[in-house]
Image 1: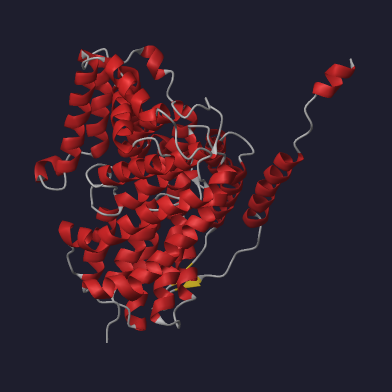
Image 2: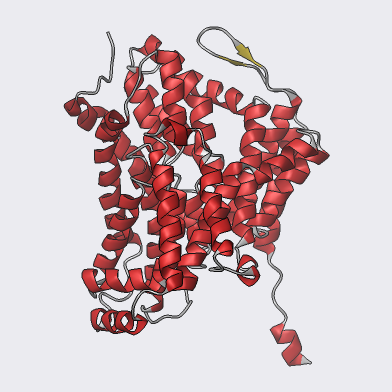
Length: 488
């Protein structure tokens, strides 16, 4: 009897407090009296409707529950749809339709690719080859993983890269000798992969959809085109500076417990030789994935392919895996639906903030604070706003709500539109605070090496580092490269 009492788990007061905090924030905002209009520099008023206020209330509840993980993150996402329907923020059909948005299915297909790489053995083969090159030092393993991840995001979507690299990291971590137990090395390996996937994805238009969306707004408002290579010219130094700074960051904050893994190179070589030659399934998987990646990469250069949605293309690989019997029904049941639901909810709250006008109201209010500020502070204020918004909603949406407003205000402060565009794109690619900020964050979380609270905690200094790099780019790097920062 005493033993049974001793084994009874203590009540989780911390969980209850943060659960009630989220509910309290929702209640306070939703039932508050109407808030004042936001007014832009042209004098246009933006009313925050009852639905808009409801969207902000749901946004605060979801953010609190996600950070402190009071319930599984996928369940919080379900609450986003339920609250929209129950409180008439948006109708149920609209709110839940976002749960099957093409972006969510893109993430599903990306995870399937990672599953195939693991099942066929391609992951282990790649991991062993890489370890034979980088050697036994854990610091070099960090660096090797980060460079490979960042480089791949130049030619394919960072979601697909994260899904491809993730099983490779699982194989590498398996040789660390700690089983599934969370370690500093494990945290740095998986969290670092997510961070550098974002850093690498800003360099070309192929890394994510946000670049194309931003250039569309920029061309429409400024009436000036930006070429594929011009964007890469200005973004490459910043992206790669962040990659190497993040390596240093993780070596400081998550220095591996072991300086080296003795005999790792020999062990990797031995395990690689045991794999033998490439199997039929490995070859088929590589051909299917390689073909889809090539087609997605060519969309930016071949008009006919540009007309085909990227989600449809990548889902072709999922179908092909079953057509050629690389996967079966049992594999489908192993998909981490918690992660899929996380992104489904993120899409729903993002569209909710956008469609109700709440996002625009927030953007106009924030940027209006910098209307009389020096140009540099205005640029940094925009960057900070985009960085925060992209942690809570899709980075495409963060760009869509802030860039048009910023480009309208910029001429009044003598700020060139180019620096607004590029600084916004830099921070939009690197959401280091919340899992919902990008698919690589959520994919890394599936490793079980870190909690959402740990991710948020380490994300704060990483975000400060990002803002410092943006400031240096604005003051030093971009002017040297010929980018106009201010206009007369």
